Amino acid sequence: MKKFRYNFTPTVLILIVLVILLAGAGLGWNIFNLIEYSSVSVYKTVIYAITIVLTAFLIVLAVAFLVFSGYVISEEKICLYFGFIKFSTPIKDIVGAKVFIKSKKLVVYLKDGKFSVIVISPEKFDEFLKDLHGKNPSVIAENESEE
Image (cartoon, rainbow, N blue to C red; front, top):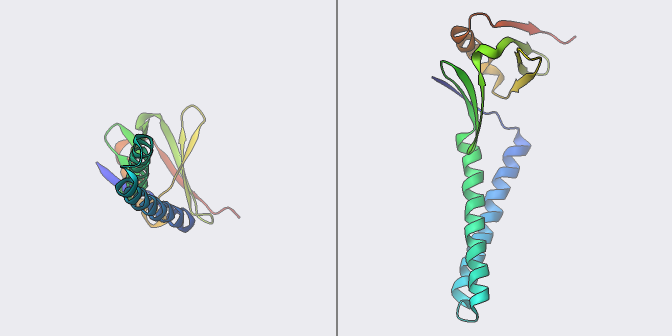
């Protein structure tokens, strides 16, 4: 079973880090408010507690996107893990793959006419295709220069 990291764009990485920082600040602020104002009313205590849980969940979700996002090629399928979300495609349904050199894209074509863009580092394209071809020798891989 081979793993390939998801290749986030710099903009997306900055946004995820920004979400983590803002959620962390919100978490700290709400913990402070819960400690400071919990004796004022039950309503405020409940609101702060719910907000703490939600901001903590947001931090966990954003960190999971950064750490656990990627592709796993097993014997029977390709799985995309995006944080806690999982998508899978049976390898037997893949008929071809094409590397677009100029735009640095890897596209996998399926039997039903659909396709999927594989978002990994361009340096890993050959390794990905080699592993895919090892699992399904009928996959036709080609390069296109996009001139």
